[in-house]
Length: 75
Image 1 (cartoon, rainbow, N blue to C red):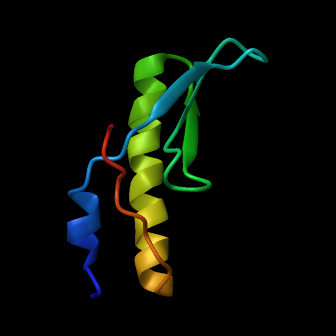
Image 2 (cartoon, helix red, strand yellow):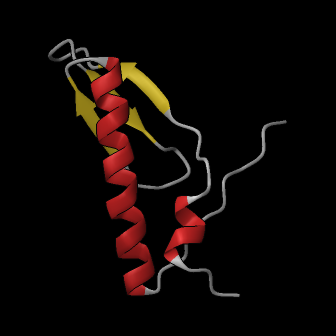
């Protein structure tokens, strides 16, 4: 079953947030979406940038007809 972009945008993916030891900023990623990550000077900025990165990541995947994983459920 092929889903549209609005379906994937409505899903909630887990994110990870780490302090970037190189410059003291923050690094945020969606482990379930390979290559979907962002950086920011603050934790809030990194998460906001990750939201934008996820939108682009999903746009490209849908446009290219590539698979998009559903979020995993917590145990």
